[in-house]
Structure formats: structure tokens, C-alpha cells
Length: 212
Ligand SMILES: N[C@@H](CCC(=O)N[C@@H](CS)C(=O)NCC(=O)O)C(=O)O
View 1 (cartoon, rainbow, N blue to C red):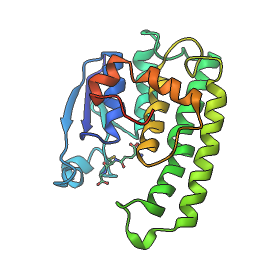
View 2 (view 1 turned 90 degrees about the vertical axis):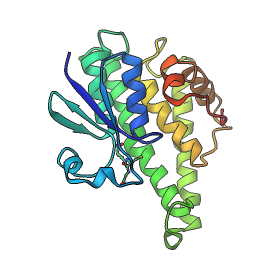
View 3 (view 1 turned 180 degrees about the vertical axis):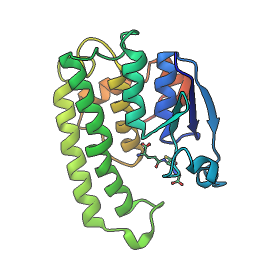
């Protein structure tokens, strides 16, 4: 068992990682940073994460950053023995890596474009309605592909729930908060509803989101 410390902030990119840790039931110290107060830009934190953002998971003294890398590592290290992550050298491991990285990198990039081009939290000078429209169109097409993947099976890897579901579902939930419509994607909505029943989800977020 490694010594783990998670640097986090409430309702942030660190929350899916906290949820994964709760799902796995591994002991982990949590250090809550106050982002509004700028804790993440203090020299002592920049020494473990030069990007000055949460989350960072310090594993036996070595920092690991980027949520998706942290959760994929947690899967390999603790998930296999708990039946929550596919074993190395299985086709399911490849599927898990594909969809989880897709969610954070490809789908996540489109969420960022959407947010920069229309979010009230982004500088109004960056707002660009045609770009927002195009991002929404591409996000919808991406959801259609995820919906097709989930047709005929309850979870991303088949019959069994895994951390792959947790990782992808957290990104899709965040996109819904950003205003990406899910109505057209019934398999995605059914899968999210199943995920929100997980005790680890309820323990971390406290309530089922209204959008499904
Ligand atoms: N791609 C990164 C994103 C990390 C990130 O942007 N975290 C935000 C919180 S949601 C943060 O720490 N922001 C503080 C800041 O930018 O100063 C990850 O998934 O780990």
C-alpha cells in the first residue's frame, strides 16, 4: 500500500479523483486548498505541481498530476484486485484507456472551447457565438458516438461497472453543467443514472444532479 496525499479543492477537477479514491476504499490523506485565496500558486504547492492547479496526488513522495493520469494510475494500482479496473494485457484495459483519455482530452477540449466562447466566467472579449455553436455541434456528435457505445450494455466495459465509467461519467456530467444537452442521448442518460446510484458518487457529491 503506497502512502497517498491528495491535494484537492471542493467541487473542482479534484472531485472525480476523490470519488475514485472513495470507490476504491484506499487510505489517502486529503489536503484542501483554498483556490480563491491562491493556495495553489504558493511556492510550496508549485514545488509539487508547477502548473498551480488541483488535483495532485503525491504517491510515496512523488507528485502525480492531471486527473485522468491519476485515476488511470489508481485503476492499475488498486482497481484490478478490486474488480474495478481491467487487468493489464486484456482488451478491456485498452478500451478503458481509450475512453477515459478520450473523455478528458478530446471531449474535454471541446468543453473548453465551449466555455471560452460563451461562459459568463470567461472574458467577454473571448466570446464567439459561432464558435460556441460549432463546439456544441461537435459535443453532440461525440455524445452520439458514446451513446452508440452504451447501447446494449449497462457499462462502458460490458456487464460490470468500472472506474472507466466513473471517469467518463464525471466529464459528461461536467459538460451538462456547462450547458451541453443530453436529452437526445438516452443510453448516456440511463448510464449516468446508474452511475449516480454508486455510494462513492453520493458520498463525494452529496446529491444526484438534476440534468438526467
Ligand atoms: N487538466 C487538469 C485541470 C486542472 C485544473 O484546471 N484545476 C482547476 C480547478 S477545476 C484549478 O486548480 N484551478 C486553479 C487555478 O487555475 O488557479 C486536470 O484535470 O487535472
